[in-house]
Length: 132
Image (cartoon, rainbow, N blue to C red):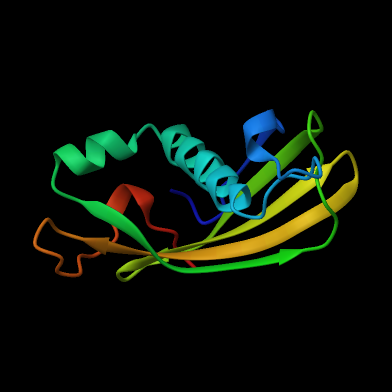
């Protein structure tokens, strides 16, 4: 990765099974949406998570933070924006926004740790590192 903070925007539609009985997107789907965007951001670098796993590298979420601002509703089209803010040492950090048009619905962040198959910390793969 380059020194710029890589970012991606993914458009999703709130599906019926993602909603609570009131028609709002359930709070538990936002981390799933973050993962969809994060996985596509990784794929944008030319690497898939499946490739990393085949090579013995596991990348696990060790910290997740969310702040809900406004609800998304059934059938809303939302945009999930994921930005890599750090990728060095043994961790990768991302920031997220979920928007409906220009309206900010949710912000969040994750910290990921790189592990081998035995659970030992590993350096972020060189092709994913951000130079600061």
